[in-house]
Image (tube, rainbow, N blue to C red):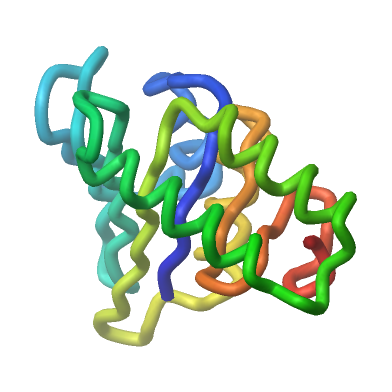
Length: 146
């Protein structure tokens, strides 16, 4: 399970929203608490990893990801011009990207737990989850948001 969170703000304290859902899970941070680059929530069910990315320089991985996402939606013939405009505006306002990856171990990390944690984090930062084909907002059902 994986998705990318696009957020208009950088809020590393937002992982507390995930911590509320995964209360019994251990948390390991890479980097300083105020400037972590990766956060790993772990328990016998599996691992949920958040990888933080911000703009550092033109043509960095952050910029390339935004450009690739914009290009993908620009080429979609099934979307109206106004929908494309809204998506491109949202992507252009992105200031923080979080790669969210859930891995299973033991009995398995359920997709429901993964999605609940990812959506709660998106709510906290006013963001949307990109599944690789669609954006999901915290209020929408997967597959319906464009």
